[in-house]
Each structure stands twice: as structure tokens, then as C-alpha cells.
Length: 113
Image (cartoon, rainbow, N blue to C red; front, side, top):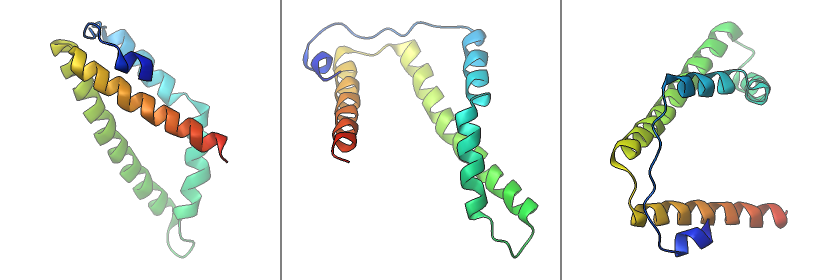
């Protein structure tokens, strides 16, 4: 990604896809056992034993779902905007540079642990 970000090229055109891709993405995320296991492993740590645990679990779930809806909604709107307008070469290079830098940083962090 860093090498691609440093080289000039053409802009990025995002292919339009139908509602099949939306449902495929939803089902992939919804049926992912890793997400469910992480949620079930982390949720009990935030429930205090003194009061109603069912109410607390429901409220934490609502907060989590609303937070995910906001984040994924923003990402979806940005992707929809990019698909209609296209991404110019400068924006493509910036996106790939930031993504490459973050991946390289994660690789260094993993290698040094």
C-alpha cells in the first residue's frame, strides 16, 4: 500500500453493487462466531451483580448496537459518496498511504511484543 501510495496513477472507481452485496455483508457479520464470542466474553465484565443483570445486559446491548449503527452508517455513507463521485488520484494516494502506515505500525507493534 505504501508503494502504491507513492506512485502516481489513475483514480479509483468503485463498482456499484446491488442489494445482494448488502445482504451478504450483513449475514457475514451477523453469523460470525468470533464477534459473538467476543461480545459474550466482554459483556459480563460490565454487569454489576447488585442490580438486575438482565436490564443491564439489555442496556449495554442497546448502547453497543447504537454505537455500531452510527459508525457503520458513517462508513456506509462515505462509501456511497465515494462510489458516486469516484476517488481522485490524490485522495487514493492519501487513503493508501494512511492505510499502509497503519498496517506497518501494527506489524512493528506485533513484531516487538
